[in-house]
Amino acid sequence: MWMRGLLVLVGLVVIGFTGCSSHHGRSYGAPPGEYHWDKAGRDMDRLVETHVKDPEKAKQVNAVMGEIIAEMKASRAQSREYHRKLYELNAIYDAAPEEFTRVLDELNNNRMRAAAKILGLRFKMKTLITAEEWKALSDDMKSYGSRYFGTGTDKAAGGS
Image (cartoon, rainbow, N blue to C red; front, side):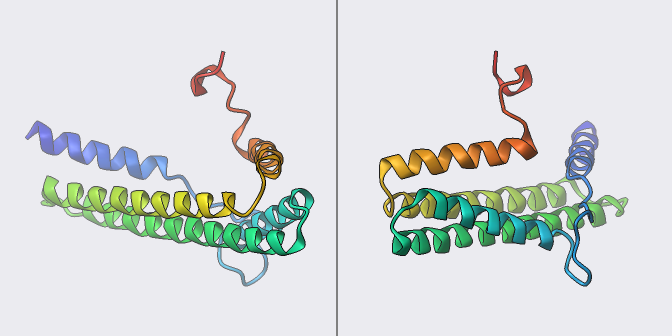
């Protein structure tokens, strides 16, 4: 019985941590978050064009970057769907722990598939540019990301 309670609690915590989608910056008629994905794509295109000197290579890198963004977007949509399933299960009083575990397993497997695909695309992109271009692009991407996710140097993130 305590295992069932624990699984329900874990399910609720997972659901609680997913957060709410923001509607800030949303274009009229656009799906939630679409503006942010479009902006991220444009920003990444500019970073690539800044650091990759060969225009043809920059075009190829931007195409791969577009695939990465599309995979991230699809993965996020699938995660929202799994969380919706957890909400539905939570509403069922007699839902078995195995049902929650199944959905959580599917969610985690989906995340791993997406991560593996993104990792493959990262290595594909790396083959297109020089080590110097990679370093400059990576540094700017890190700076870009830190505007949204912090610097990663706080104690909670393992920094000093």
